[in-house]
Image (cartoon, rainbow, N blue to C red; front, side):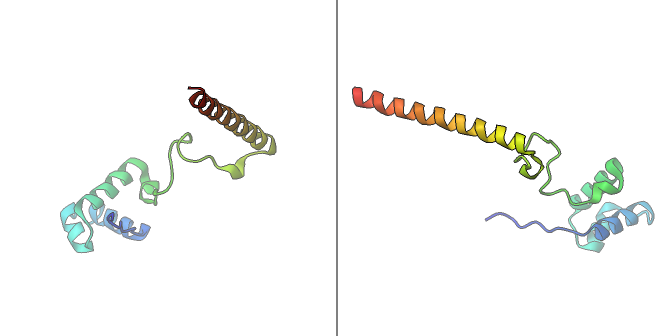
Length: 109
């Protein structure tokens, strides 16, 4: 079984960043005070420095690359959907024909 990750709220992340920037607390003392791992707090601060307020928002389950992950089929127009389904159908027909050819080759041996 995998380790269950804790999801922290945006407020907790901002509190840690506030303590780091405004209260001049170190990362280790912040992690002890909030009961959060050192590397987690360090990562939040790095994300905040690099991306600003968007750096502390939850990113799990989202992909930065539009080519990765499943296509969002809700955004497809009817013509795009038809084109995709026709391509899938043609692929499956070729695959089925190839499998039938392999079975017939085995029978002929």
